[in-house]
Image 1 (cartoon, one colour):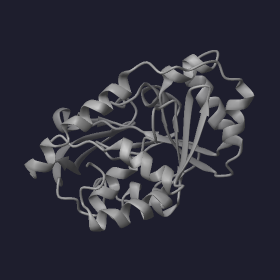
Image 2 (cartoon, helix red, strand yellow):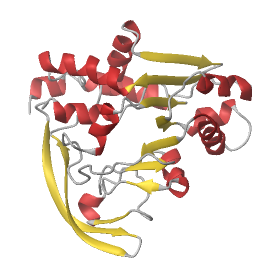
Image 3 (tube, one colour):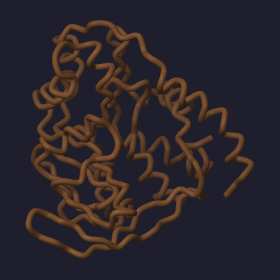
Image 4 (tube, helix red, strand yellow):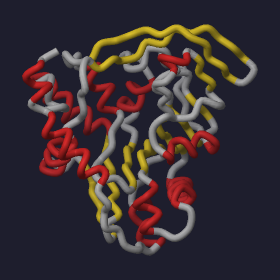
Length: 263
């Protein structure tokens, strides 16, 4: 572990924590104004991160249903993280019943999804016809993994009701460019897929120390270089980007500075 880099990052942790948890001023937003933002994108597939609290302040009705209805109207397939890191302890992964650990939207989206990848720690939920056939589901960020496919297909990423762009795809780039603070671990367990039961070995990343993305710096860089489309609807923040653009921009910088994402 690079202790000097690690300890000089604590002020960054504190600033991010304050910005993530402080109440944000969000006012009412007209439904058609919210819908029009999504209608401006012609992509068939979207990968979504969402914060329901800000959406609840901006739009009437159930915030989860508001988001899902808008996405359904504008995209053929909706993807979201179904991450279940607790497999490392439980050693049991049910594609139907293992609830995503992070985010209420993802927790609820499991019931509406049509498909889930076999990755016992970092699964991807899909509503629609998009699939990861022929991909390596048990080596999370391998060159032939499901996350690699997202970049190859240049999937559209959106963050809804979050203070900045959320991008779990960055973890794939950390592994692809071999950053020094990420290694790989293997966990044996059981996968349940309907009535089918399979013994599996899941290879997944391990972060050496308490590392977090420097989201303020990344957002500033992406804004400067036009990587992210940003909307502010009376305080409700929406972000859109191309995963291929993210990979090109971030990959170039990781080659010269392996700590680029976290310092």
